[in-house]
Image 1 (cartoon, rainbow, N blue to C red):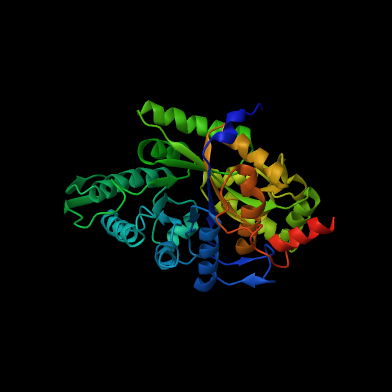
Image 2 (tube, rainbow, N blue to C red):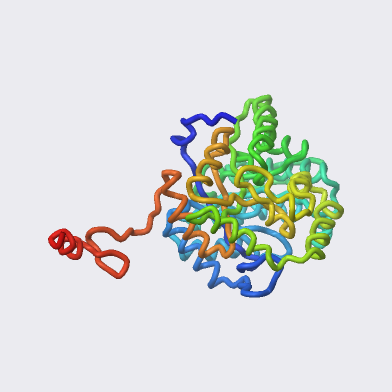
Amino acid sequence: MTINPAAADRPLNFFWFIPTHGDGRYLGSEEQQRPPEFAYFKEIAQAVDRLGFPGVLLPTGQNCEDSWITATGLATYTERLKFLVALRPGVVSPALAARQTAALDRLSGGRLLLNVVVGGNPVELAGDGIFTPHDQRYAQADEFLNIWRGLLSGEPQDFNGRYYRVEGGRLDILPVQKPVPPLYFGGSSDAGLDLAADQVDKYLTWGEPVHLVKEKLDRARTRAAARGRSLTYGIRLHFIVRETEEEAWAAADRLISHVTDTQIANAQRRFLKEMDSVGQRRMAELHGGRRDQLHVGPNLWAGVGLVRGGAGTALVGTPDQIAARIREYQDVGIDTIIGSGYPHLEEAYRVAELLFPKLGLSNARRTVGDHIANEFTVGHHGARRLQAAS
């Protein structure tokens, strides 16, 4: 694929991830595991806020701390960081969601982003009391978002649809962001693409090879254009960036070194048999559950997806290699990266220190320079002495 050099000059947002289901150095193992504790979430949030990441994604699900409550707590400990939290049509009413949205957007000073999550695992949805079939969930979400958007825009709502009925709905305290906080959404099915074209601002994909991402974005772009709308695009990826390629691939191998064949088989059965997510099926089919098929593209590794649902691929390599791969994604329309790495605290520093400079992104931390002397640098006076001695 020919890469347009202008991609290097396009704006790029690089978000990070708060692991509200726990963290660690090894997938599939309790060894050196970090439990889901707010104090640890705060460490990550404050680090990435200081490092220059503009925002973080908080996941949702039965095994996660609630994203809304966690984001509310983290907003009080951060200054610039934006929070991408889950908006769950079908789990809460649109009126309650509108009140929560306005409250968190105001509390955070306009730092709220919404990730529309329609479903994916019928077993988990059943645990939440939701038994709506796949395509109907997206039709329900469309009604939900129409009511939610109207309330947050300050418009009285009277609505009588297939899934919702509202009479005299209103919201007296409105959000900071007008008319509503931005909506992010990822869905690979036809129903999902229709919802994206009708309702959202940023369409997300998991990390597939570039040609597959281009194909998916083209489909979303075409559907949005048919409705007189345009979308922006983001990608969810893990990162293993090291100073040498050998170090990077050794770290990738180490990450899954405790994963057993039984764990892989159980996970793949769940992804392909229990779940009705088209995006999850596409992730699983990249490698077929086989350890010898994890290299699915240049520097693109599917090892995370052997046992992890959702985003299952990582970019692995040197800063220059990974920056080149990101430029390829930019060239097909991606303007936002939502990254993560294990453990998330340490890998945030690696990404900011090694990769950000290659992407022209600002690392907001103060760097050690000529005016500071410590054990990592000779410092201003030491430099003078060295020059004099030479």
